[in-house]
Image 1 (cartoon, rainbow, N blue to C red):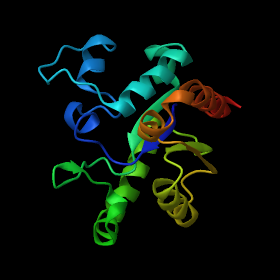
Image 2 (cartoon, helix red, strand yellow; image 1 turned 45 degrees about the horizontal axis):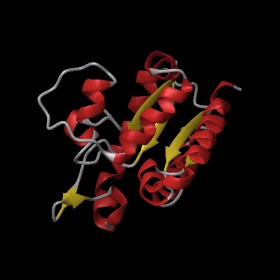
Image 3 (cartoon, one colour; image 1 turned 120 degrees about the vertical axis):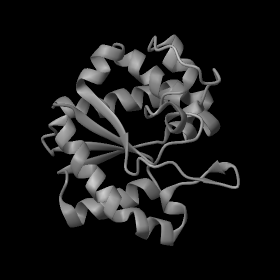
Image 4 (cartoon, rainbow, N blue to C red; image 1 turned 90 degrees about the vertical axis):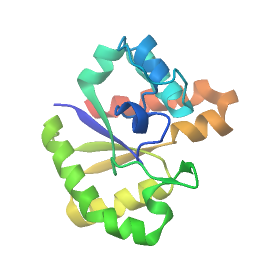
Length: 175
């Protein structure tokens, strides 16, 4: 059994490229030791998540306890930039049934006990997830975490604080 961590949807430079959530090609090669032919570029969200993984005790320790996915595992691009499922009301409505099915499928894959799930993003992603959970009762508790990209882009000077916050909140899954 593993605890689920849900991001928004794959970005074009990380999980949208590698197929592994919050894992860019460079980390896939250098940290996970999976050779790949993707351009060896870094992605901010992946950099932070792998700092969390390292602080947790490494790949095996982390991935034995947690499973990272996305509420919507489809990546979207608009005008060459990442586009989130919640950025457009029509898109959000269209993908909602798929998101609901995805959550149920991820729970089965992880043999999740339905007590706790984590949400990467404390704003729109969390609001959407919370509303779905109120209707479908997937989890007893959804714990929001600041989005890794927001941390790396706007709060990098206090990165250690956010790393500690993640570790503290993730530790709640074993309580």
